[in-house]
Length: 303
Image (tube, rainbow, N blue to C red; front, side, top):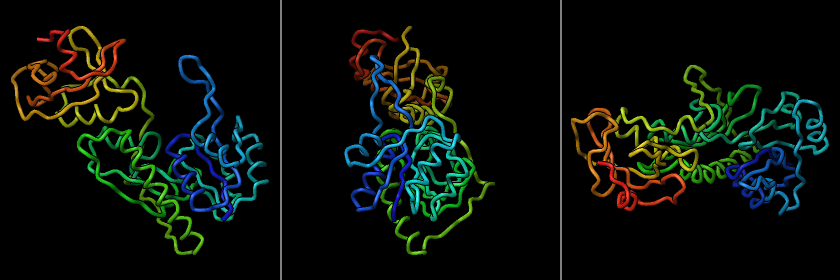
């Protein structure tokens, strides 16, 4: 099958690498336009663009998707099918109709749950027991197309969204290959989504960082691990806004109000809703490096 790939970040690059490894003909890669990043605001190629260049795959970065330019490029590439993984832009309906086998997407959730952006992070933040990936046919809606295959995996108690992201990227790439083979063989199922069960999630931003200790210990811990590697949970303690990177259950309770620091043995013990406490074990102070909470406590008295 002749494939045109649409994707931008490292999650997508894992799928592109799998296509290359499996010997598929990738005729081109559509990637979001380059953006400056870092303190020096230098242009850095996205993972998909760099991978495509390394394998002599033509790269296309149209500024607009609806002015006809992208459509003409796609037609000129004559794909049998298009694969879309974390592209980050809406693909117009006229482009969806170009490949005979349509466009398929690898989405980082168990659809119809978590349509939209950042599904992996929200599965951790919300304390879900399971996460997963789904392959689906793209349509004009936001992750609303018919499903093909899905695969689930347990979320670890202390697994960050970054760690889960890496695992699901590999799972998604493997599921993509299975999907392509079965589509070509004519054996792939086509399962309409149950819209009544659908949920939609939004992109992450820094407004989510402050930790609400009035929630349960599980809510607090999942908040901390779900916001890694970005934008990272925070808490104001001792007059400083600390970034929180690791926490664990204590099995203890306290009559103090939620958010109160009640202990400093082995970390920063804080009361949560219902009276149970959580132990913050890794933090970062403003202008400092990430460190164990016990090391931070050597120079900062919180109780």
